[in-house]
Length: 324
Image (cartoon, rainbow, N blue to C red):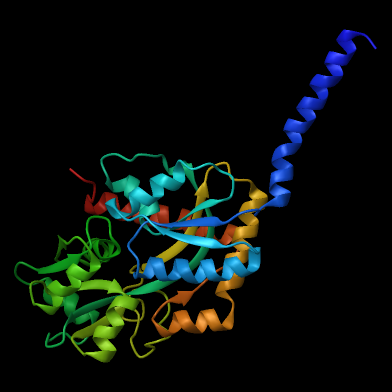
């Protein structure tokens, strides 16, 4: 065999090895711990859902799934870390509504929307519209009608683009309410504002609102804003039931991955999360604190994200929610 032939064969062998490496890596995945980046502080709805998903995924995948809390900028700090991570199946984002709406509202973003791809829905904490316990409103319709008089009501939010902000603007745009969003740094601060009487109301995740409804009685609930009643508090009617069919929004948590992560890995993660959410013990634990487990396929979550992007985008434009 001459030198040219040996060189050609060697080159072909090298190319074959390189081509086979990604496939081999996928077959061996996961061969080390997987990281779930939570873009919010520990203890909130997003974090609790992440931990439930991580526990179930650890069992399903046979590798430890670690939680890393990286809060800041409405979830953008953690999302940016994942968007710029290697697409090797070892780093995922525990996403929330901000992964859809932040780019519509913020002046600038450190990454493009398509840098993150939807993988799986974990679950959601239905939002609950609440007012102080001594407020005179009996339900959401009563509250909205009262807001139309005079200067309207102040409505606490967890910042621009937060779920409570969208609740207020949907009621304003779709139903003629006069709610002035008042941005606070967090849901806990806006909750304190309602309890202290600084604002007329707010919308908060069920996991935060229910203790103040069921245990200390400091909140009066007016409606839940998801499509179904809360498992842990079924006596509270939905906004849809009260005549507000377009007020459907929740504090949800899902899994997103860096663009370019192999489909085979994404499908395995989606299946692991779905299995975790369908585990009776895990589901019961989440429902007890006001969280509804969802799960489902990767296609289901892609459909959900696309629908939310269209729906929330319309509200952002109509309410002029963009940062000045």
